[in-house]
Length: 157
Image (cartoon, rainbow, N blue to C red; front, top):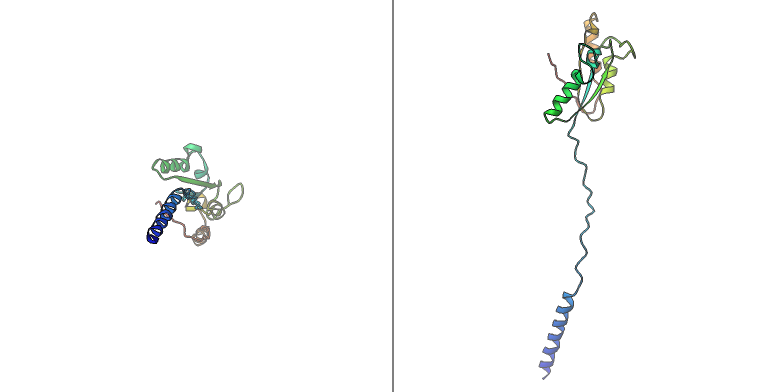
C-alpha cells in the first residue's frame, strides 16, 4: 500500500507543479537599449571659388540664373543632392587681390572648403593676366587648402 500512496503523492506533486507553472505571468516585454545611428548625409558638398563672373554678373548670370545655381539644380535634378558654398570677389584671382576685401583665390578657397566638402571648384579668371608665369604657378599651388583628406580636382578645359 505504501507504493500506492507514494505514487499518489508524486502524481499530486506533478499535477500541482504543472498547474502552478502554467499560471505564471509571462516574462516582461523586451526593451531594446539600441540607439539607431544617424544615416550618412548623401549630399555632395561643393565649394565654388571665383571672381565676379562666378559670383554674379551679366556675363556669368546672377542669382538663380548664375551658373553655380544652375549647376546645383542640375545635380539635384539628377538625384545628386548637392550643397554649394560660393565664395567670390570681383577682381580676385590666384595672383591678384580682389577689389573689395582684397582676397585672392587662396583666401576664398579656404573659406569655401568645410569639413564635409568633397569638391572645390576653382574658376580661374582673366584677372591674373600679366602675372609672371612662375609666380602665378606658385600661387595656384598655394591655393589648395590643406586637408586631412584629398579633394577631387577636375580640369574643365
